[in-house]
Length: 342
Image (cartoon, rainbow, N blue to C red; front, top):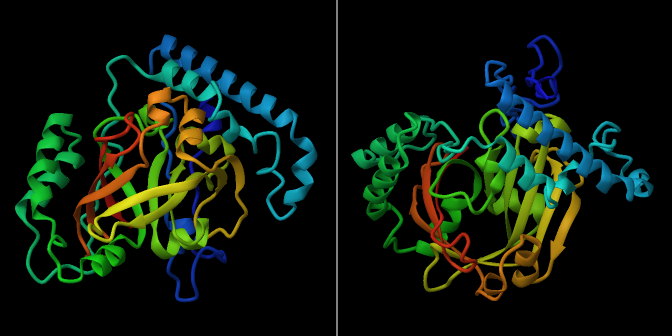
């Protein structure tokens, strides 16, 4: 429903702002808050009707999931009452038929959601030598929302120029460069997250977390992906869906992370909020987690996923990263991503 998608408002300068540090800088919780656009009421009436129907089914599935779990509501007294209301378990519906229904209902036949973020030109620690022109070409292609083949060609041209390849301390440099929060700008296909197929303003923003921030949010030796905003804003502006797993860099190739269970799919809030996360799905094997995701038996028996960094900068905020799922689940093997560090 259009009225359920609200614009996030920042506190006025004259009011005390709990989301600022003592020196006035914004903390991660507020600086990453999504600024959602209002639903465009000029969309065709048929499309609006389908969206409304999908939304109703989405809410119904969530309420059905919540109905059997109301007895546990009192266990989370430190969360907002509104967050723990009947909408709190909407995330559970994402693992049911409601999510595919919503995706299929609101996707126009020819829509493409491959460019999902606008790149920034801000670099906190620029390198001594200038970036290659291929980097600017990729940023421009993404910013202009160029056709997928144009962005793919720009990615292919940049990958051989990865600044960390062949570094004498590859293992240490890759770990240091990865540490932090990354926003997804572009992806090659959409098998890894159906919600990213949604058109704006329903499509959430996608983030990845490595190193210290991941350890704080999901535990030591783990990495995480988060989805914020879009349709998830019906749960509140700070709501985030978290998917996390174990991850270990390969000794002989530190650019590649081997992904391990347990796999956790959780409903929580933005990083830095110090709020508990509610577990929706927890699986201790690749096969069981893929089964939950409706993978074929062949896919369930495939080896563990490996996630390779094809291009990685170590320039602080604004660094670019190109990565690929190089092994594992056949549904997502070959998926290429472009992220930018926040």
